[in-house]
Amino acid sequence: MISKDSKIFIAGHKGMVGSAVWNTFEENGYSNLIGTSSKELDLRNQSSVENFFSANKPAVVIDAAARVGGIMANKTYPYQFLMDNMSIQNNLIASSLAYGCEKFIFLGSSCIYPKLAPQPLKESYLLTSALEPSNEAYALAKISGVKACEYIRTQFGKDYISLMPTNLYGERDNFDLETSHVLPAMITKFHEAKIKGNLPVILWGTGSPKREFLHVQDLAKAVLFSLENTLPDNLYNVGVGEDISILDLANLIQKIVGHQGEIIWDTDKPDGTPRKLLDVSKMKDLGWTAKIQLEEGIQSTYQWYLENVEDLKRVKIG
Ligand SMILES: NC(=O)c1ccc[n+]([C@@H]2O[C@H](COP(=O)([O-])OP(=O)(O)OC[C@H]3O[C@@H](n4cnc5c(N)ncnc54)[C@H](OP(=O)(O)O)[C@@H]3O)[C@@H](O)[C@H]2O)c1
Image (cartoon, rainbow, N blue to C red; front, top):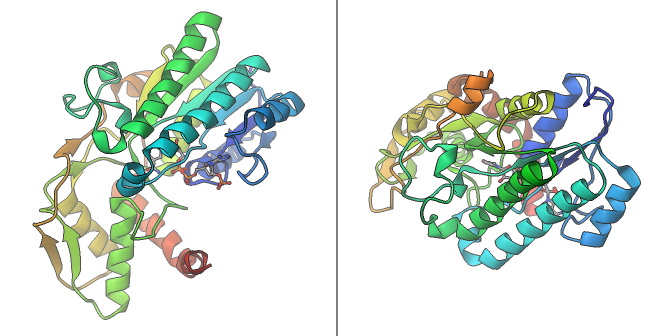
């Protein structure tokens, strides 16, 4: 039985997702949380991970540790994306099973679903056709993590589950224009254009593709829900269940940031997949839904960015 003083290891607790999970658990009275940085414990190292589990024996493990990156990084280093992620999750999953961890929550991403699967994406579409080539290595690693947890459920009867979040945003996101995702990149672009005197902002494509965005605090609540309930299945999508066009997203972020210049759509640049929306009915039927509206979530994210922008620049220079 999980209780408020159960020992919970949050792997990746300094990352965007891990830190939101840590704060949410703490706010909800979980008092025995443990975490280590990659410098203290490299989760790719099997014997170090085994020693850590042997010494700490967590009752619960949340796996929010991963080598993550944008399309360029995924395309340039597929071997590292496959092997680092498999090593991290294999070591965590195997040691959890070996040292009696009762509950394991594995975090993946919606890129596990086939490139041409129908929309919205249902959990049952996993492994029905080929993956998007640009992040195949990352997706394969995540799929093997989902399957390892599923096999442990069926073979050993343990509560090991996988949550697949849609695109996330929020505090501690990556705002670096070279490596960030679309939403934080737009915040940086509109902010920088505003402070330079409302210069035009150039965005890629036509703005017509639609994407779904979940605030990281909502994801953390979904992890809490999965901790406190025994969910009947092994794999759940976590999203808001609705999407927005990139054009509407740009207009919304422009309004929130207060940029008063022009938006130029560079239509020579590719649009990418027309739509990527998760079917979130499985989690909804169990009683969990996202609460943070996109406008409210972007406002608080922009506030966090304003409070941290100088530190973010220093980290980049350093
Ligand atoms: N961000 C998104 O939009 C998004 C969307 C869907 C799913 N997800 C999933 O959420 C999870 C977390 O993502 P995130 O956005 O929070 O990433 P993040 O901010 O980059 O955090 C990743 C964490 O993993 C840790 N880590 C990486 N390599 C490690 C290693 N070798 N040993 C120990 N720790 C290591 C890092 O620790 P240090 O900081 O100490 O190096 C960091 O705390 C990933 O599985 C990702 O697929 C993210």
